[in-house]
Length: 176
Figure 1: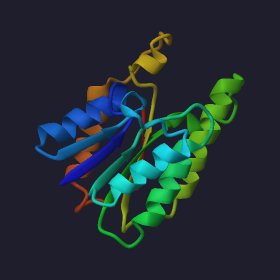
Figure 2: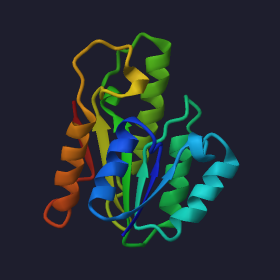
Figure 3: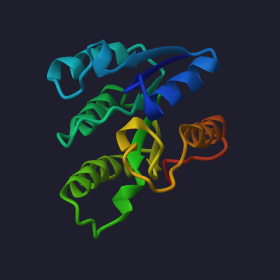
Figure 4: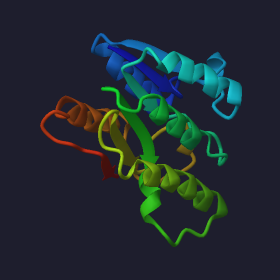
């Protein structure tokens, strides 16, 4: 099987890349470091062109507040409509909080909430796994001193859902 992962060079994306690689899957990573800045139309087009021959797509890369991750998700879902493929979307548990005061956190929550809403009724063909994660120990949140999930925790959750996808239909799961 072939897996395409956006934002694969660090944090959650790297952990998921390493997970699928350890299973012997052919992994393709698309990140800013190798020319795939999802905030550009050109990069989204290149990613979608690669995705035509992919079995699993991990929508992990986040572009600061411009909805690029959502646009990529929508376009990929349209491209894969009716196909037996898997989309793993990395969302955030922050979407359950309505009283956020900090403007950056509010905007981040809004961008992730829109992804969740888009995926709400999308269950099969492609099969969608929407991971709404709590704060995870990655370089992006190294400044935050609160207790965090590890990327290993994320992989454990993904592994359970992925390996039991024929028994349980998990569309969205919130963990933190």
